[in-house]
Image (cartoon, rainbow, N blue to C red):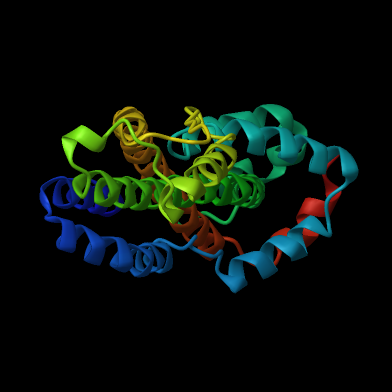
Length: 273
């Protein structure tokens, strides 16, 4: 998967890069994240499909609209659209309304048969795709948050390393009063707050009057947090890619069904009870 590969490769490079190389990567990462976000933007529903769905919805009675919404929730929970199962549910619910068109049916749901159950399946899948969009946006935001906070932690880690490298072993018990050390508590608090909504939020702390020796402990905590966030990033990216792939299948199926529906169904669908 493209997004997962970017995350894994980025982690391996940062693990082996020199200090100067690490700084260059940190500066480049926002541009890389923007590129990923642009490439993996949520695929929009084709305007023709949305227009056709709007025409059909305007003909629906409230009871039918409610049933479609329920079916859409069930379909949205499936990894792939199960067209045969959907056809069965439609025929069970609207047996009397569909009976006059049974003799005309004869083709597969997406194979060109112009039947009333095509129109209902189309509306259910359309609603499921629309429901999925908000979930996709939430997943994308989570991936972006994880990557942004990983970048923040790497920068903090790099800044602390600069402080500790310049101190002789005999001076490590002395307080660190540099701008980096003074700003450290607020920077860690900001990361904690930003990750509060994640599955594994950070709980990093730094007291006032830090000594150089205490910075070693903070570096160890930072490493653990980065390892945890890298694992979260990989899993979240995998889930997002799977959701993107599923949306593509939904849109492809919708396009196929839409091609098999003719204009007469917009009038027939208004007669459902």
